[in-house]
Length: 257
Image (cartoon, rainbow, N blue to C red; front, side):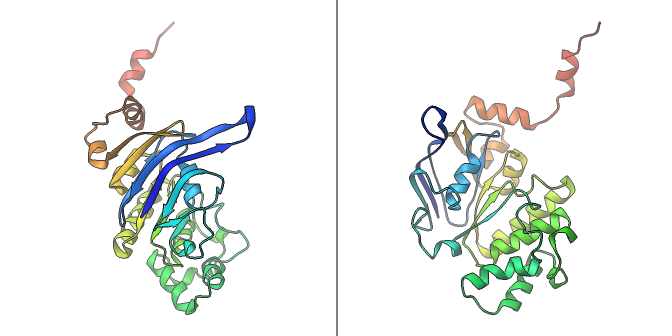
């Protein structure tokens, strides 16, 4: 469903040029959930933005459902949609939930608007009562549910998920992740999930690729991640970092006057 071959992205020119993505290749099967992990600045979100056609300047091949991302193909919006990291920034503050959900239908000439909007709100756990509310009247989790509903309005086959829970309270993160898991099962969706949180990847994905400095350094099944058996030293460092604060190690490092 997703094919990336030799993807390169460079920002700036000449001496100021920065190679954000360098020769990245991977594939994602239909119905699979694939994770991209790495530290901040590793290039994972840049890959996602290329696939979402938000970064049109790139080298290599990027295809979704056999459609070239670089082509101006009218089928593309109904193939893939993106859910952004920040639910506070991805919804227009002066537009109601209704407008956010009906706009894609209007642009693409899709009818039966009322039924589609109410069905989408119900499917993401909100219901029709939220239809005419503004973003400031919603919690962070509710805003992200609206963003997911908006991404589903055109019934895409692929969702591109850019750290969809990192801006939310911990108590809300599990609800959104479980919602995404349910939607994938019900709709047969394909996911490409970017996250720095390895626990989220282990919960949501079948396979993953680890990125560092714009390159894929390792690709593995989630079972390998759960078994704490990565091949590369960089991946082992990410695993160690994800375990958080090591009280015993910190105690050993304390010195007293």
